[in-house]
Image (cartoon, rainbow, N blue to C red; front, side):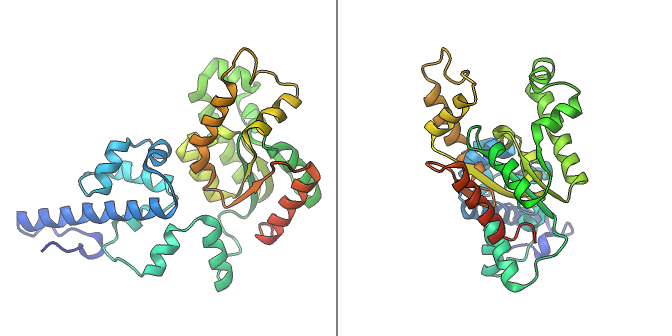
Length: 299
């Protein structure tokens, strides 16, 4: 009967049939672990496909042990699930505790680490905080006020992108399109990480559409999803004097709801969530500051 390969390493000197058995066993192991992590993080196969760029059909084959996945594609799946690629390949099954910890969301993992007293002082996230979410949730307003209260710098990633591109965002989009914008977005994010160990950053809602950049963000920042009801998103954008969401588009609200729904699982990967629906700016600010203190993002 096929068994899991020792340490995830195949033995090429085995007879052909035995080696085939080991390969099949490894593929089943990888598929099983991808499914465990995906389900543990409450990410649907469709959303994982969008985050990783790997087709839903191929993900289904992979999880069933039938997908002869390349290292490159597996790395993309691992990045989308915020999990070390080595974990999918190791022959050691590990303990249930280790498996549950690997599948947990970032906030749960950090809470466990703090309880054990082993949180590294110089963790990858440092003292960097990032607010994510759809436009109109309150990221810029709350970010600026919170940073002032905490006496740390506040940055908007779109401003950094414009600086890297040497022109306003609208012109970048017109000249280089979405692909050019995403390239500059990744460079700008890397610049913020490299130059700031203590900062509060607000990013555009669409950053979750680029798996590698979003994985870098989750790895390098304590993330907070600022969320609100669809109508409040729309009302707040219009209150800023921007009528574009509704102008000549009777289906604007349905489109907004669709965008929120499609991004919900991606936003939910943030380490913390803050709902600003029905809240005044002062109340939401107090909640954000309390969350930052409770999670010890700046300690």
